[in-house]
Image (cartoon, rainbow, N blue to C red):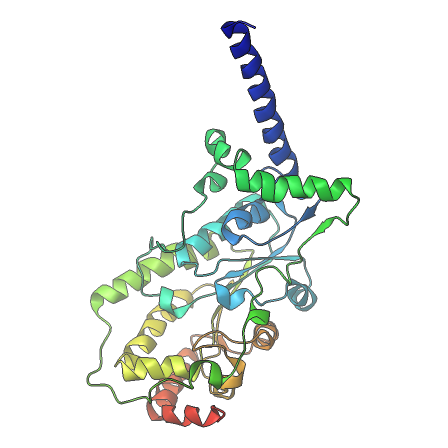
Length: 359
């Protein structure tokens, strides 16, 4: 065979291989970039930043649960029972406000009848630039988020996608293994990986000590908070008045508040909450909740694995509380809520928390 024929033959074989691999990924589509799940395959949900965009755009649902790791232990089935419609859960561990809002926007743009959006408003994300994003979470799969078909090669010819997902899916189908998908109750759950209680994060901590100085919120802070909330929270609320938005401040433990107190940031942080709350109270379809003054919860270290992450029973409780209107902040009660929060943690003996550490 001369060189010309060899090159032609090689080119044909290579083209067949590439077309076959492309078709394999496009048909199985483990990240739902092109279509919703097919009934013949089993889909494993385990990669939030690669799969959430496709889930949000392609699946059928009327409710969204989203947020950071504070929402990963929610059960979509509980939300469906409580709120009476079909939910997806698309959490983003370590997600920032813009990332979360962009995903919600995709859901609202592609679905006409979204009734509810349930989202955490993590307090460490409030006083951040409106376009702030994490740089420590690896490379984002932007090629999955846009409509540019040319950069899809990073997906359809991705060796990990081909061999770790698509080939495995086809092999399982050929063997007659059960089809289906990881449930939204189990997707991204982490509670089984950790132990909870004071011994996990207080046993070797130094006692709390009074702050040397206290910090205040600056005008620059207030402008930054306002821009962040307006772009990444209330813009969608205003644009989609027929959707009910249930947004909540996750109930961090008293250890979190003790760290703020020790660093002289307690009053400042409560003012950060105030600035955010006052931006959000003017929309009839936005319900803002906080459970930081539920101190029976926040001072019970058995409910936490660290200073901020609570147990799954708390996730279930939050869903029910929001549905019942408990913890709802309004024009009439938010000042009292903030005063109660400040007074409690100003007077609280944070070192009493060490009594919950077992010998």
